[in-house]
Every structure is written in C-alpha cells, then in structure tokens.
Image (cartoon, rainbow, N blue to C red; front, top):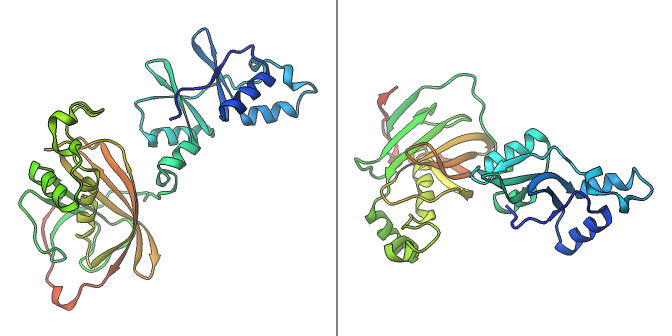
Length: 299
C-alpha cells in the first residue's frame, strides 16, 4: 500500500485539492473529517467535475467526493484486496488499521508488486475429483518424511485440472545446506540473535528454498517436466520446522506439450506462503525411465 496518505478536509476547494495532488504526485486524496474517513477524491472525480460545472475550482470536496468509501484492513491479503476491487469496480481501496487510516492500495500498486494476482487463471470444478498417491520413477528417490498426492493424473499424461501436491518439513539442515549450495548466507536465515532484531523477530527460511518445493511437486508429474517460466509472490515467512506443501494445478493446455499451472505453497494451517503461476514443457519419459506406475493409496 501507499503510506503515508495524502489527506484533505471536506471544505478544501477542488483547485487547492488538485494542486495538492500535483505537488505530491498522487492520483487521489482521502477526505478526513474530525479524524474519520469521510470520502475519497480521485482523478476521475476531478474529470467528472470539469464536465458538470462552469466554475469547478471553487467547489468544495464535500460536493463531489465519493462518500461511500470501500475499505480493507491492513491485515488483509493482496488477493482479498483485489477481489474487493473487482467486486466494487474500483481502482483504489482505503486501508485501515484498527479503524485508523493506514494507507491506500491501488491497482497500480498491485500490478507493480504482484502482477500474477491479476493474470493467473483458476480451474472451476463441478464436483471433487478423487485423490491418489503414486510411487513414480520420474524422481531418483523419496524420503520417508515427504508426502506426494495427486488428483486426476493418468499414468502417462496430464490434462487441465490435474493437480499434484508435495509436502515436507523444512529443517535446520535444509536451511544450512541451501545456504551453502546457493551462497545465500544472509544472517536473517542463519543467525538467531541477528534475526531477532529484524522485522520478523526470528530466523526465517530462504524464500527460494520455500519456492523450491514447487519444483519438487512439478517433478512428480508424469513425464519430464521442464520449467519455462515462473512468477511468484511471497505472502509470508516460513519458519524452520514448518511443514509446507507445494500445490501445483494445471489450468491451461497451451499446446505443443506446454502447460500453464498455478503454483502455491501453504503451511500446515492451509495459509498461503507463496502464490504464483508457471509455464512448463512436459516431454515423454525416456525409455530407460519407463516403469510400472503403482497406486499405493487412495482416498
């Protein structure tokens, strides 16, 4: 969100308000009356005013502001904010924190920071599909702590609506091994005393390590899965010891063995840690990798 917020009183004239917007290089003003949000004035409101009155500059904001202000709590997710914008057909939301004005979030803010939120496709379902757990040979090995479930996948191919999940617990050894392998030795991930003085108040897992679970899930699709592109938004930190699940779902068949997927990571409570979308190529399994695929459990 944009914060602090440029504000104005209801009696401020349109001319002074427009000058304030130009000086602050903003496209809106939140109108505050006696400490409470009374309205919002945007560039669209200024344009509408110009077409309806002979002397628009002297009009007070109270006479043309949007009084039905749509708000969102500062604790809301970006996805919630975008849904609210779509529901009310607006481009800006006033953000409140325990009733106090905290900021403004606009579609420009969303596009700048998390473009895939507005672009990603979803699969609509008429009825739930069965889940099955497969032992596959697309991967070299699995560990006892790892869990893989799939939904709708055939033994040899994929289609829109197919879904695969990969779960594992992120342990101390994972973080330190990843730091050494990647070179990312940021003390936020490795030094408890240092991390305690950051905004998180404790050590957190590397974001790229968390998103790596997406790659692990994709590796469980039938065939040879090759990344083409990946967009990600990191919605919250993961802690060492967290049980995380990557959820990948095919949402579009782009042709020529290319597919678009939603790619998310959730914690043990189902809260989103990472949201994203990816494009992948899925080639046939080489002859040396062809095995009998076994369904070992179902629900």
